[in-house]
Amino acid sequence: MKRNLLISALIAGLVLTASYSNAQHRHYVNEVPHEVVVERGVAPSPAHVWIAPEWVWHGDRYVRVEGHWGMPPRPGRVWVPGSWQGHNAGYHWVPGRWR
Image (cartoon, rainbow, N blue to C red; front, side, top):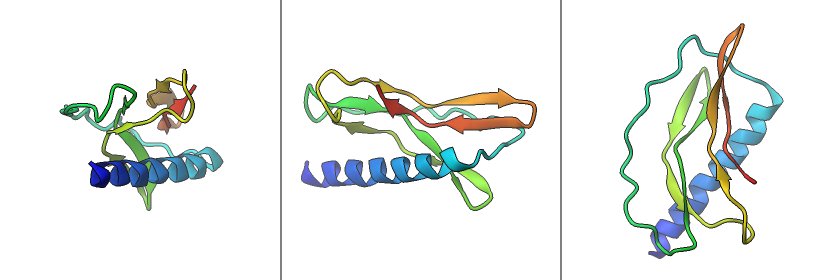
């Protein structure tokens, strides 16, 4: 249980760091990567919410970051999943966020 929470925290940190870096510069691809079916498993507690897989720019391509169960930063916050946005230059990933 502690190990899963630590892994979730590390993944969330990676996603947030990558999200900040992606906000600085958009990276475009010609095609949206194929969607992968993910088994969520059981939530560690009723307070946990599923944070869907995200995409981060790494080097010269987008890399998929696995989904995980996470705790809202404050009560009442909800997770808004990331999505691919089309543009004249191609597609870029808009990271998920807490709202």
